[in-house]
Length: 486
Image (cartoon, rainbow, N blue to C red; front, side, top):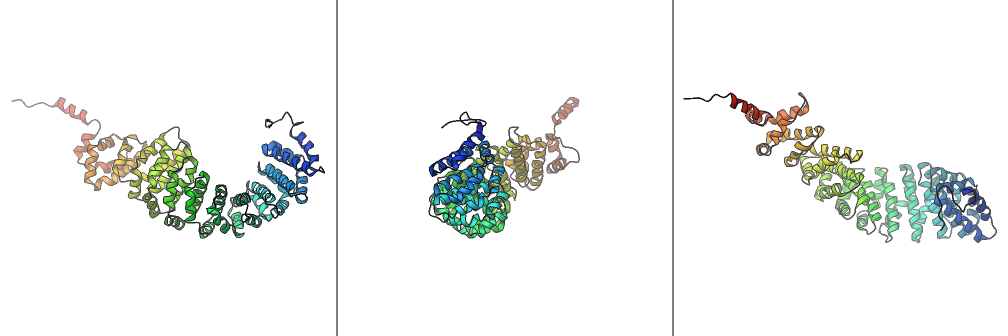
């Protein structure tokens, strides 16, 4: 295999344009094998980088390929579809060039070819064109590809099923309207039946296609659920293939995010516990959709957040927050923990007892954290603190927290201490009351109000005793004290 740089190649005369001028006549050769070999060579070049793909377009080769795609034998059709795919994959502009030369209609005709390899090559090219944006995807739909792709996923050949499912996924992802065209062609039922197929690569594509349909709206998500994907899809969370796990978590996330009812349905099917197990069994980006799914479920209601707590989701999310090296995964875990803790004192306590708050604080304070991680950590701390009445978890914050977080911590003490005599005593012996006297608050500020509320829980002389400078005052009194003499 020759290697060459992106810009030039020692064995291509006059660069990319030169090789195109050599290969183009070979596409018209009378010997079929030469035609096919020339097309394959073009495909491999175009696949290599976008400059060479551009040269195929500029060399006026596409119209010739499209013409031959309709007329020639199956070997040539496969090679020609490969070139179109290789050109179209690089950018929306190159994919548009394929659409402009009328290739879509011919590719769609190839989806009805007798040879499964031709169907596969055509489906692949159509998927790569649809992948870029809604406009190109719509062009593929308008050419009539969707019903034929749905037929292709029902064919016996695994490779054809995979590519057709992938193409349906690429068409569905851009908008609810495009996803609806895939649904209207009856795709969901056939995709749902393949969730249990033993082929991992097929399962990846099937789960991806169902996710891309379900993500757009409540109606589309409900249609996916009605195809009875639960509890079947939960088996994919234990799959040996990491991407099957990831795509299954993504599908469940895309359904859970829409409504409390859909989340409840997932809880009832055992989906929350299964996702938590899945997060525990993998690392890195494979965990991300599962982490987000738990956050979405918890965000909907107190009861759903409690379902995540009962299934032991909080310790698992805390592990992700501490051990994942990537900031975006930590940020997702922080967000999810905030969604769980924000509902009630009971929820906040469930998060606080896992020692998550100091971790969130250090991530918020760290200059090495990404901006997103800092924002999400701060929001999570605020969400949890505003509900947290579990004082042992709050006390360290009196010493470490910056002013904007300190006010929330002091606020919580001011709510709890008036009603809890045991906590009041502990607050003195642990040094908390002394620490509060050292806080410098603006007169009239919310923070000052909170401090006053705390101080009102204690006799005046206790507060004075723990105020800065009190020992100096006592020493002055010693100095000025005149002992009584007999």
